[in-house]
Length: 237
View 1: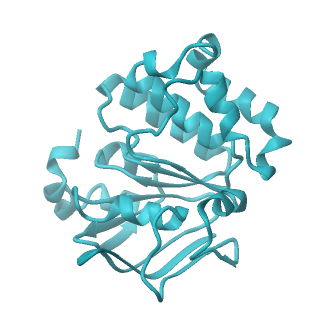
View 2: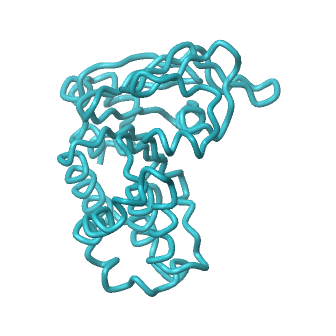
């Protein structure tokens, strides 16, 4: 479904990504693990069309080349990104945020169906549809961010550090929700420092270090790999 090959990215003289290659198959959940500064967020932004990689990068989705395509066209192609920090519109209500997610052409005719699934997935949002998002907790705002992304009717949902700053109980609920999304057949590409939680719902994982992919394997093998446990001991909670 998603294939990334030879993707490099520079911010001025800083080399953020160096010839990165990954793939995500249809309906697959893939996790990218790595410390801060490993280039994980830059990779997701490059796939989403928010940043433009160096010449030579090849990004294709569902058999179509999307490298160099504007971000709004990538959404139309079926890729949605939940960015680090959520990126919600705090001065708008929950309902307004969700409706903005259904702006794309591919999403409009499914808007009612998507909204129903999101409110079943996150029941709190049903009761708070008229609440301004900037008055909500971090966990509730993350629900809105994920819901807004799902409203675009994606085939691939990318999430950048979805558990960042959330209480442990909320993190558990978040990953339960992601497991439910996975069961609907969506492909997930997740950047996450909570190794145990993310690998528990994943099919495969990649290890990122200093802008490069340094390892990969089935989630079940990675979660029991002593080297992975040593590298991410602080995240094994």
